[in-house]
Image (tube, rainbow, N blue to C red; front, side, top):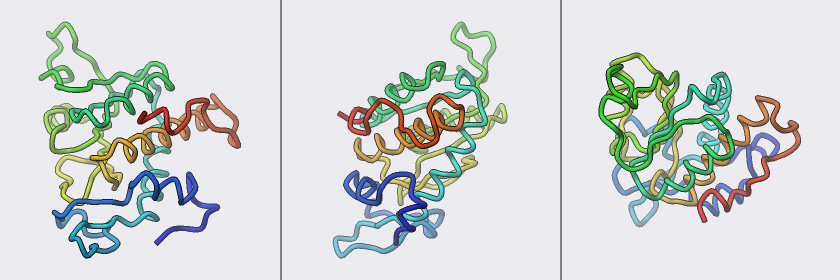
Length: 201
């Protein structure tokens, strides 16, 4: 199920201990290719190799943008710390945790209007308003999708457990770490000062 260790963005044990592969009992057709198997308790188990591959692609895409052009949206409370820690680690990133302000990316007359060039959402269902706005103005969307999500108006999917704070913490840590490397904030053989644990504890 896993790629060779040399190809992994973090050791396999980090992925597994975070439960990044644990899906839900619901499965959509969109997510079929990312499901490794269905456990006897009916939970879908996501393919760790494909999670790793998509994280690498997503990290490369995110690193093509300046930090101030990135917006992260997270309605679910289990991802709030990870999002805030990402923005703290990569200064300039904008984010909304909790309720997404309607029209903030589509209505220039609003005082809080912003013009991001890339939006990252933590779960396409609770974050659907941000995705809809992105579709209106043509902003690409990266979405963290569990086994029960669909891909409507999503440009790049990161398959993962998007309900667990540990799993989300690891995803955001990896994205921050790879971004820092790509931008030259840290050496290619180093990692960011913030620990993985600090993204969810």
